[in-house]
Amino acid sequence: MIMAGCAEGKVAGYLAAHSIPNLFYILRKTYTQKERRMFIKNLCEIFRISELNETVISGQWDIM
Image 1 (tube, one colour):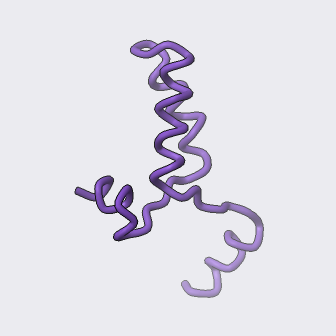
Image 2 (cartoon, helix red, strand yellow):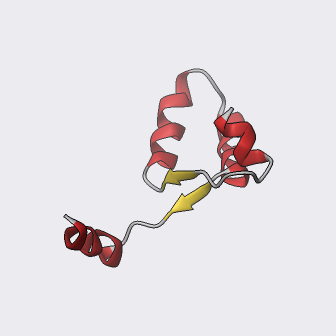
C-alpha cells in the first residue's frame, strides 16, 4: 500500500542513500546485475532519495 501510494504520487516516500548499494549487494545472489540495476532504477522512480550530509546530521542535534 505504501509503495502504491508513492507510485501514484499520493504520498512522498524516501529511501536512504546508503540503502541503494546495500540493496544491490543483497540482491546479487538472486538477480543478475542487469535485473538489479533495473529494480533499483524503478525504486528511484517511485521513491525520493534522502539527502545525508553534514548539514542534515548537524541539524538533528538541535531537535534533541
